[in-house]
Amino acid sequence: MEDNLNCIYRVINFMEKNYDQPVSVKELEDISHYSYRNIQRIFKYSCGETIGTFQQRLKVENAYKRILYTQENLTSIAIEVGFANIASFSKAFKQHFGISPKAARQSKEQLLCGGAIIPVTSEVLLEPEIAYLKPVQVYYQSINTCYNNEEIEVLWEKFMENDFPDSGIEYFGVIADEPLIKTEINCRYDACTSVQSGNKKLPSKMIFGGKYARFTHHGSYETIDDTYTKIYSRWIFNSGLEFHTLLSLKSMKIMLKTKMIRKNN
Image 1: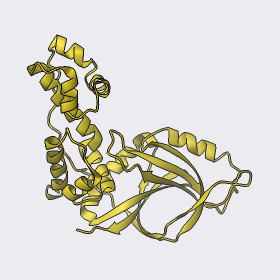
Image 2: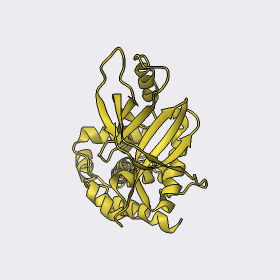
Image 3: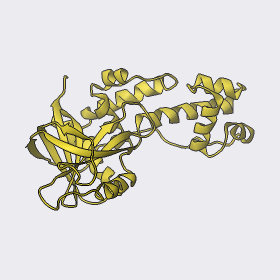
Image 4: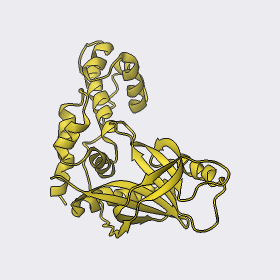
């Protein structure tokens, strides 16, 4: 497992050297040897924060060192550590430290007390059920949100107000990652059903068939990150596969159905 963490250490080292520069998806893929979708999730569930959050933390922490030990003005510091302007820098700094850059300079308080980021792997190895699913046409409603969000439950409550039959129907939750390096892993979440609503015409699309690894999460959305951690910080390293995630709800259980594709490396 230690060898498998090398991809994360490569990303950490690269971000530490280039925290003040825009980082592209291709750079992350080249460094980690994983797709963007996978290295973002592996990093989050192994390190406890997204790559975007890590980069922003490096920016404000390096800025604070300059505030403490140099006489540079705050605008220059903001630009040098990678912020577009003093306003965005001040907002990020206050969110991280709880005080403004100006107040930090005046107080000279030692705010830097966090340790280095150390990736870990899950002690629990989940073994998925391998399933072969046929393509299915679904009818859906969407929201943009983060993975672990009660907005998803609200979407399902509204979605189930549609006129669906009581039997012979399947429900799916489809997640599409937002392809940007951000402080939160955001997504478009689609609540889907295999049957058109009787009282409202819902948009439709196809869910592709193929080979899936099916993981079962027991519990609410508040604890779903625990299951993702077991998948992305343990199972994926041993699988030799990459995947896209399809989240399925059926019989009041959350089924993590993970579509797998072979890695290029």
